[in-house]
Length: 72
Image (tube, rainbow, N blue to C red):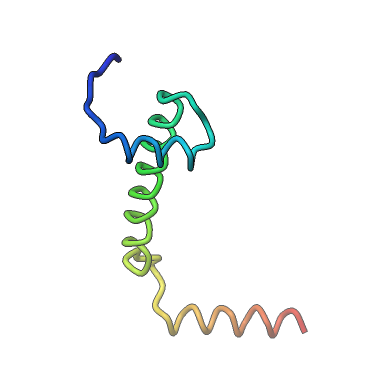
């Protein structure tokens, strides 16, 4: 998709340097992918601790104890 955008010269220069490329398109695509990856990871990290596994902490500890007893 073609898009016309106005980007500050200093921001684009910094991006090109950090992306280690002289191709503007490559640098911008990399920046967009990186931004999206960061956002997806933030959303996933927000889910940590909010998932219901169906077992209580006590039940998990009992299951662990049983597994350890069987192993020895």
